[in-house]
Image 1 (cartoon, one colour):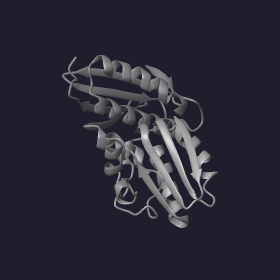
Image 2: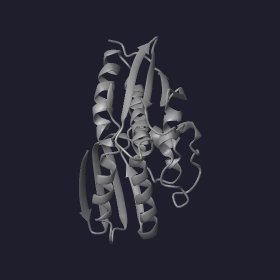
Image 3: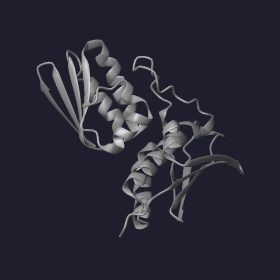
Length: 98
Length: 135
């Protein structure tokens, strides 16, 4: 999976490309969490993400918990397969999806 | 096919299975769902079956009458994933537990999941009906 970050002030956009699987999820978590100090708005851009496994969902949940304490989090661009997974697992209940 | 029960082998398994599914004209959505189920099962076996040593996991794939059947077996500790506690998906992010989603997803995405303990092996059989893509 490719991970890219773009920061403007207190807004951080993380764009994911490829498969957020069990191998990629810990890499994402450690890269992302090292950048979250002072971030008030975190945006996950999933436009080019093909696939998410439960390990990837765990990173989204951990990020949501963290951002609940310091600002807001938005998820955008999820494809229909990934949206199905968000619905199936109840993630639609707490994620802010654009 | 048999691989070491290690999460690093997610891609190896996926490639092997994806190719067979492709050849049989399995639709994209079913392919993605089978990929996910297989990954979650590998993660479980890698996490729980072999606490003391490295072990293997075997995957036997068959496709007939537009139904994919995957039989996944290991020689590890007895582990019935259908006993796993179902996550409460109605909770807020704060109250959600990190974990427990893997088996839940397998059960949701597949049509059937059956666990058996046979000859000191864990054997998990999952099935998924698909709509063939036109050639």
